[in-house]
Image (tube, rainbow over all chains, first blue to last red; front, side):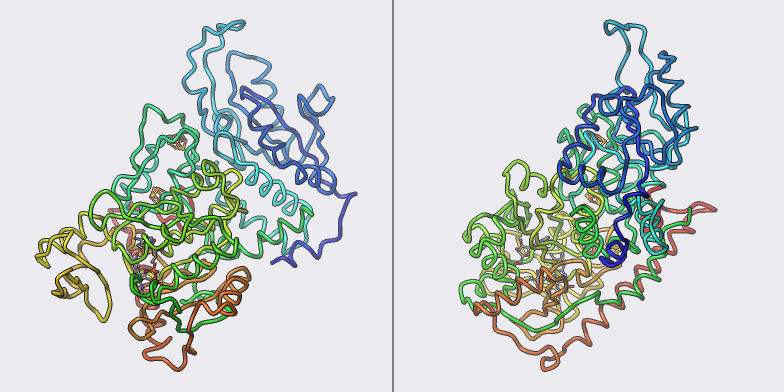
Length: 264
Length: 304
Ligand SMILES: Cc1cc2nc3c(=O)[nH]c(=O)nc-3n(C[C@H](O)[C@H](O)[C@H](O)COP(=O)(O)OP(=O)(O)OC[C@H]3O[C@@H](n4cnc5c(N)ncnc54)[C@H](O)[C@@H]3O)c2cc1C
Ligand code: SF4
Ligand code: SF4
Ligand code: SF4
């Protein structure tokens, strides 16, 4: 597996183009991307050109790009946001919803407007309610290492050789299926889609994943404090009984080596 | 997009016993560990070695909880704490719930974790798809898996011990599943054995779709099956596991015997693994036609 990635010569000329599209989010997702530190610099050096980004690239209009990383939900009372998200879909080959707000609304699900200086902005929708989204990276804030893995895999999918494309496709498939699954998430998903389905085996991953510690385990099964849940979707996506792909995860050793090698 | 590949196909690729570099029968060379251990004390001994060598700064183990025989995951950072957790508790200890606590709240950069095969699956999924596990993936330095046919809720075990075996939970010295029976050993020397057909209905439902018996995704996995009493069967699986295991052997931590020279050996392990996986694979398939044109979810096909 390490070979799969390594055998590609460093293809500087063949970088992918990436943009960061900022909707209604707190910039925490962007900070998570940046939290890859050296890894981010390697990605930008070897694999990706940043062609759009509010704070990072001096470009006013959304350009054509391979991958759009969208942060935040879309305020439907804000014409520019609605326009930009539609444009993103037209201009980007792959749209990735990065973070709970873009995927599921997250904390912006609770907005009711009334905030200065745009008190009329009260309705925020997950990106997938307005355009088709290809890949989900749930979580609040999303995890830097998952953003990194998805970036590397997106690169391999678009520019890699046949084996690399195959690996990238397999890796990204569950994150694509999550995008297909819908735009609503809650700690209750653990009940509906895991425990109620007779699938929970009490590993505890959901509790570890929750950013607000809304989940505890009572006699081995998750108990969600629904008042605390911010609807980020991390728990369900982390649960091995939401998805467990036997054609990828058992190869963890090789894939982790390969990602490390790619970022050296 | 194609669906994720069918688990069956992949199982055939990896084999029932998973990938491994080495398989031996072993036990700890430390009498104090053996005295408290479930089997050959592999888990406690290997963590102790890793802790003393600085390979890990702590290990997530299943320690004593609020009620007798109810485990609670915690991060052991001393040998005493490790020792306090030895022995098998046949009910759920949500080990992975501590993985972020240990690395982020306790700030440990190098951790160990012991768990059932499904918990090892959770750890590896967490490393490849760290959705809510910021900065966790590279801090897991030793994942020890224990073989597992099934697990129980606390209430199930209580019912087995108190109703079926007529013993008080606090009076139990050891529980064990082996040789086709569920054994309950009392503090006063009494022994009760229950046939496994009594225990089946109490099993955790989630175990019935489990396709791993010998913790295929651990660095090192171990269980009693295959080896004589007081000894353990050990699979050394990853490069990392191999590295730590060889150092522990060089340091004299374990006595070992070639697995080919012990009875019942790998043949029994393979038989049980095959039985478990075949049975559960069938359950997974039956779930697809559980209702009238309605299926139950299949996690191996995706998150929908
Ligand atoms: C539910 C369950 C089912 C099992 N089924 C089988 C089987 O079918 N065949 C087989 O050969 N072996 C099985 N085992 C494993 C076996 O009982 C021993 O745990 C294993 O051989 C390790 O023994 P040891 O002497 O090396 O470990 P020890 O040194 O005694 O340490 C045991 C370690 O396991 C941890 N532990 C105890 N209970 C749990 C738990 N509930 N969840 C997670 N970690 C725990 C403890 O924290 C401790 O660190 C099962 C274990 C469990 C928990
Ligand atoms: S329970 Fe926690 S992890 Fe799950 S959706 Fe709610 S906030 Fe997110
Ligand atoms: S993450 Fe583990 S404990 Fe939580 S719902 Fe899923 S299987 Fe159950
Ligand atoms: S049988 Fe499988 S799902 Fe159940 S506890 Fe054991 S490893 Fe986990």
